[in-house]
Length: 321
Length: 259
Ligand SMILES: Nc1ncnc2c1ncn2[C@@H]1O[C@H](COP(=O)(O)OP(=O)(O)O)[C@@H](O)[C@H]1O
Ligand SMILES: [Mg+2]
Image 1 (cartoon, each protein chain N blue to C red):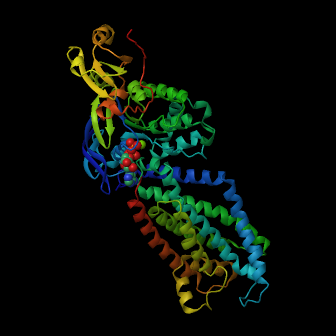
Image 2 (tube, rainbow over the protein chains, first blue to last red; image 1 turned 30 degrees about the horizontal axis):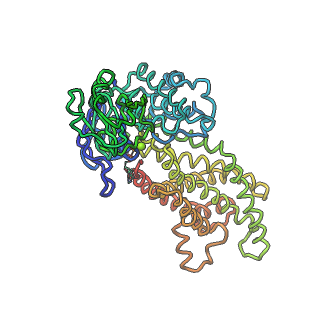
Image 3 (cartoon, each protein chain N blue to C red; image 1 turned 90 degrees about the vertical axis):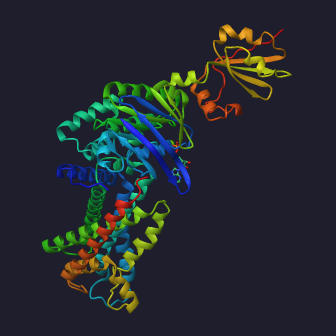
């Protein structure tokens, strides 16, 4: 559905996108997951024909974004990161203006407008000015607007940015519904790990303009190598080989007076691991999340900064007596 | 760039209607703009008109009446240039992006904007014309037709001018520059407030490259029978300016960055 090939976007000497290549399949939800400034919006702008790449190119729905921009535009719907609806107009009027811009024939227009309004649950608020909408409603209106002309590909740039947790969940519900009912390929960008995990069939981790990993959420989590255990010592930290001698341990990382161990089946193997250890102060255990995958891939797991906060999914404290 | 060739003209008309509709709704709902557009001309006519009118000017009519065509043009100048440069806002907030990802050509968007500018100007001018009746100005069918044509052409011309500047300027502060360096000179050098015949040569030269000069003169011809040039001459020069500015405007608009 989308093919990106050796895409480079430079702002002066700064490479916002650095030789990106990947494909998006038909009818999948593809997530572009990465921190602020990773290049997500820049990529969406290029795929939506608003920005010209410095090098490389992309094909969307069979059309070249550089040479066949008009066909690409007919094939796509876009929800931008910043609000782009007119807040002086009503929800309905915003949709009508866009239905006209897309040349939707008069006979179909009203029907389609009601359809998309229902789809995003705004049917009863359509005659209110958009300035009276909440952030989540406004974003939903823009989703409805983007779907008016039955696009094949739908871009959502940070659809839940700035929404409170409840509105975010509502938004997820609607995004899933759209995939079911509208049969579109969705590319969504986000910097929320759990959002990508929850919604996406495949995820591309993007940072500094590069995709550093691309797979389904479960495969990505497997890649990290099983469960994660962090053992903190009150005094002497044992050698790596005290851990790697076990077959079930994949990898050991050190950080001050603790070690982070990637291992299989923590439930059955933990007692073996710690049987011969002295001075254990705490043991933390968790299932890997996308967050861990990302931190491991971007190489700053050891710094311990996790953007989502909270290292623990499950916390166990163990003191050897 | 996009061509409109492969879109049926029906769709282009629909797109123009959409862009026009949006502008008109926004205009009608912004009460403060409506109020300001009534009071500004009233203020000029009453304060400047009677203030300067009490000094002794050799202009062949009451000063209030003399500046009346100028006040009509003032309405059009302010409305149209502002209107065009609002494109800076549209771009700052993502509205313009949402238009640019639709399969409409830049030229269509440009023309849609100018249609909006023309309609807005007509609203404003209608208000000023009603004020004119209070000044004792009489219109007939011909003068109304002439006023309508000049107002529409000048408005098209200056909305294009605003869009041209707006398509190069990225920051909102640029809007202030447009006001100081475009709107005020266009108005003050148009002969709206004083006759241009007796100006020093260098100043007169500047008034000659101001499209508003010919509009003021044309309206003075048709309302007061007092022009420097003939109505036909004014109309021809105004059309020439409009043509050139529109071409430059469309070219600038097409090379404008969308994001
Ligand atoms: N117009 C621009 N000029 C210069 N640098 C830009 C411009 N737009 C974006 N950038 C830079 O490109 C990088 C990627 O930005 P962006 O695509 O917005 O990231 P994201 O959407 O992932 O947060 C950032 O470092 C940003 O500062
Ligand atoms: Mg972004």
